[in-house]
Structures are given as structure tokens and as C-alpha cells.
Length: 247
Image (cartoon, rainbow, N blue to C red; front, side):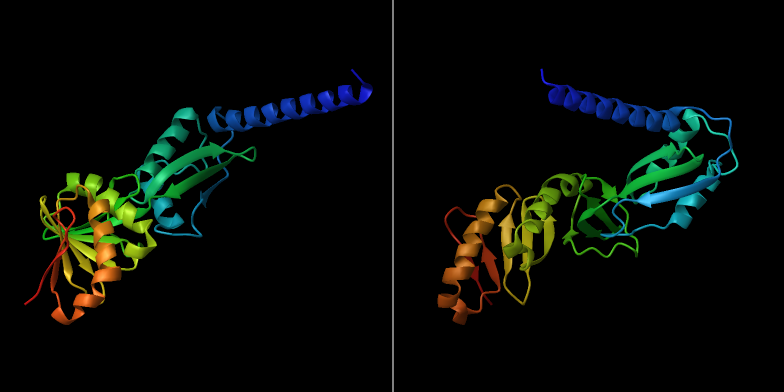
């Protein structure tokens, strides 16, 4: 092996050892108990440029309410875990990681939950997030997501309706055209289009991709030929057909 190759391999070895040492030190500060009191507390909200549903003030108030505010206290591994669990319990937090820096500062890095579907029922309203969990309504959440109204059960909202909302969100054609869905019953879902378009009887959620593909063909090709009939309702429940009804 040439001297150049040996030098290259030595350089690679040194880099690997250095990286392992940095990782070990970082992990050690995160998990190792310390006798030095915490000097400060800071937060890093990783996705704050895309959304900001909470404030650092309320996170600090949450820690103080639980007796976990770390400044001025010595910390052990259990304390850091309790801080992580408490921050993670905030209704807008998706993930949280707590560690101590070499300067004895507690740093909390977190991500926020992301709404996917808004549900409005007679007994209240809530979001379903991208993890298919119920997420509370709060003024700071202004995301434009699909709305579902009517007889919406939580089980249906977190499964079939969440799948439908995600599909619509990823489909520019329908994202621009669907205003909301009304759940009359599990077997009768009504899709309400924008711009005073006819409402669409879709029936059960099963096979919605096929049903909406058929509807799209009708809207792009067949609707012009029948626009004088002023349909108030389109029915896509039956295979191979779009049935128009009007008053």
C-alpha cells in the first residue's frame, strides 16, 4: 500500500474516532447526571418557519406548573425524561427531546403536530393530525385543511376520512374543487364542491378514488353538454355511471 493511501486511511480513521467522541460527549451530557445547577433554558421549535401553534412562554409555564422548571436545579437522567414527557404532553407538540449542553444549559428541541382534517360536529370541533390523532382547535392553527361535518365518529375520522383528506391534499385538482364533506351516515358521504357546483353523492368512502376519477371525467367532458339542465346533485355511487338530478 502506498504512503498516500496509508495517509488517507489514517485521516478517515481519525475522522471516525472524532465523530464517535462528539456523539459520546453529546449523549453523555444528555443522560449523565450533573452536580452543576442548570444555568438557562432554551427551546428550538424545529418547524416554526412553517407553523407556530404554541409559545415558549406557555411551555415554560407548563414546566413550572409541574415543578420541573430546571433553571437553578441540578439534574439527573430522570429529570430530563420527566421534562421531555411533560413537553410532549402539550396538545400542540408532536415530539420533544431534552438535553444538557456543556455549558449546563437545558435545551429542548421539539416539533409540532400538523392538522390534516377539521371535524365539526354538534358537540364540538377538533382536528385530526397527520399521525391520525385527535388534535384540539386553537386560534393559532390557521391551516387550510379539508372540513368534515355531520355524523362524524372519531374512529371514522382517524381512518377513512383522514385517508381521504390526505389524498385530497396531495391531489391539486380536487384540492381546488372540494369545499367540504358532509357525513350523513357511514354509508352516505356527500362531497360539496366549490363555486355552487352540484353536491355529489358518493355513498360509502370505500373506492372514493374510482368514484372521483369518474366524476372528474364527467366534469371535464360531459358537464358542458348538459349544463343547461342545472343539476343540483350528481350521484357517483354506481359503477360506470354519473347520475344527474335537478330541481
